Amino acid sequence: MSLPSLLAEFSGRDAWLAALLGTVLELLMLFVVLNVLKRGAGSDIYSDVRRRVTGVGAKIFVLMMLFIFLVQIFLIADQIFRLLDQHLFDSLNVHKFLVPLMLMGVMFCFMPARAIFRSGEVFWLFILVALVLAVFPALRNVRVSELSPLTGGGVLNAVFRNLIFFETAAFLLVFSGDIKIEKKFTRKFMLWAGGAGLSFVFFVAVCTMLFGSLAPIKTTAIAELTTYSSFLTQGGRLDWLLVCTWVLLLLLRFGVTFYCAFASIRYILNIKHRAGFIGFGIVAVVYPIFVLFDNWTTRTPVAITIAVLFLAVPLVAFLCSLIPTNHERQAIPRKNNQAQGKA
Image 1: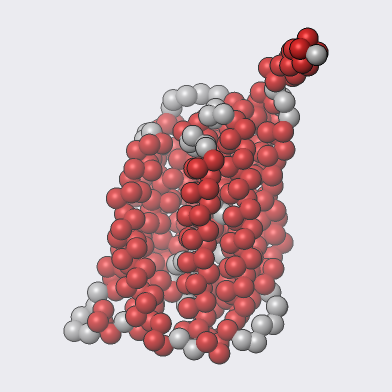
Image 2 (image 1 turned 45 degrees about the vertical axis):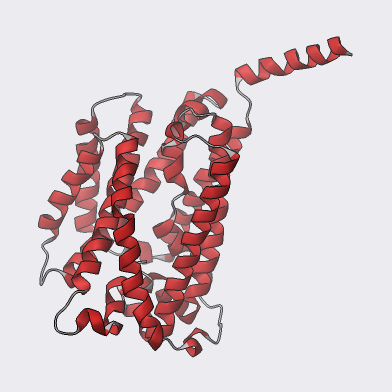
């Protein structure tokens, strides 16, 4: 939600349509991943894939996952930098920003999965209040006419960017061994995910109706919406509270993504510890690339390639889950023999 301009840049007034299509696509991917986890019966994704295909095949699959997480580390760090640089600092040096951010990422490598998600529970109420303060006072200024006419131009391009920035299905694959999948859980999870997706579409639509043709340049709209909230700006500025809350959310997501990259490398190298060694190895890759390269996802061929890979990971995981393990292959003849004996 901090970058709705990303969609408006490619699809203009149709940004909300791109958000809707991207949400539908993401919900499908989440449903596929939940079915993968259900078939895995509580084992981690690497062990499950390795039982169904060769060890080399499992490592290649995890390499695909690692690529996704490294890309998202760059993108989330870029969002945090924009928010801080434009709203909390007059001028933010990239190195002073990256050093503490990367150290925080390394710290997440030492945390168990339960602690990571418990930390998220601390912030959800603040995030909800921040959204209400940012969005609802601005509704009195919306112009519904800004949503039309639908042109269809650039919507698919915007959907690719939506997938790159907001894809989350692969996160669940990393934490597969810590998630118990039941029918009730799947139904509840999909309802919450659908609600989150619809709120995202609503937010992008509000930005389009508020900013109109200026939407593509509103690079941190979650903070810029507060200009329409007189009680937040009258007699002083309180919008920095919303910026801080949103930065906290992005920092948490950055840490979780960093942990996912760490877990993927741990699977590939087949080691259980050495969190610091792997964590600083990720820093050694991410740090120079973040400093040297900028806006590389704006290139359409690059964005399409990354988006296709993002879609491929859940689908490949699902196809692998359909391959029976040796234990399952042996169980099939036993069941057939038992059936014949009863007959």
